[in-house]
Image (cartoon, rainbow over all chains, first blue to last red; front, side, top):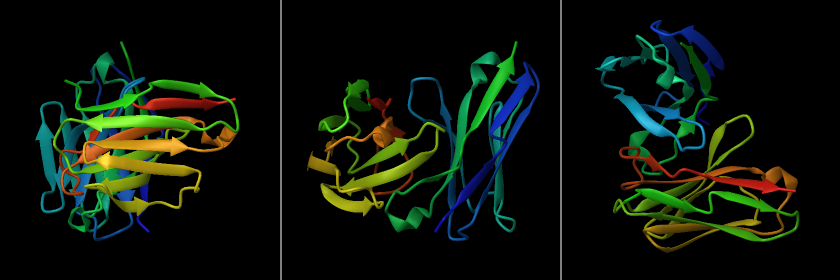
Length: 114
Length: 113
């Protein structure tokens, strides 16, 4: 079955630095890759996503890149701020399956030090 | 005007008890899900319902029984609770069983003592 590996498990950066989180997936049929941010005591919230027909997508300080050949995708956060501190999850899904089953990575705890 | 709401937010109960968690969404979605987040924060799907029909049952013990009275509600009933059931349970919804517009509730932290 589909498997998503996420690294690193923890990441500590200074405010203003960049943070990069990487994921790999196993099922080449996966074609939609969302990233979620989970703050303490809250549910995961979608922050950015990318579809397999696109190599890169950017939204202000957040960007996601996708390498379909290598089955890698990454989240890039620039100019990090303390409020970026949270747990980040990547996920993968075959969007045409209509099961809605998201396969999540293991999560990355990001700490941004002021 | 919460999109996906779960109750209760916290649930502490003894082993062997039966408990229920309720979920409601007002997004007009027709697919709803239960996910379990363990102590290592790993998120894994348990069930999905599309318009009251069970679509996914991810080898969850029979003690867990989802019930969907209508497409806006998906409840989770757990019988004979065990210590290992302690986790955070998230309800979610999306449209047409697809990944777009996937929205999670704020979670129910279940502690079995």
